[in-house]
Image (cartoon, rainbow, N blue to C red; front, side):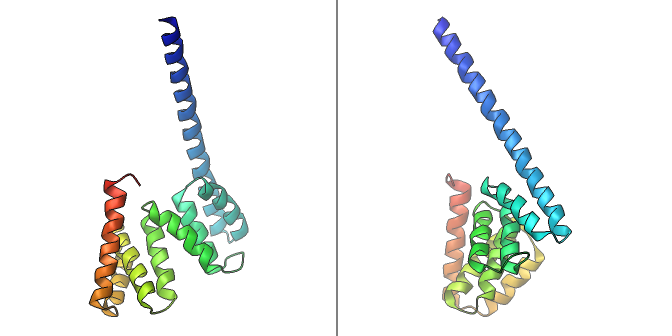
Length: 171
């Protein structure tokens, strides 16, 4: 009986410690994000990138999206579209609509190929469904007018797979 009580108390203590660490880490990530946002607004892009990298590495979706913007636009560092795509993709995959929108814009800017159009349409479709953003909706409309029905169908299937995976399976 005593060993069970001790084991239960230890388990409860470890769960408490895990919770406290998770909460304090989340606060730290949010603080780093907002400090990075302040630096970004003051055109201190390298400082913003450093702060956002720390938060983004822990999974902070807004920091991931912010790093994507810095790499996409070459703010405070050389432009790197591949790194921008990686960071936008990380935030988009976690359901962040602005990451989805920014990812789609990168695919649109890459040119009018079937693969780019399908990826862009998928991410714009998801961004509009999750955020009801009018600008994303407008871009989706423009993009749809230059795509074939087969491309739109493929993009819709991919978007539906993403929805199913995100909302109905453990993602």
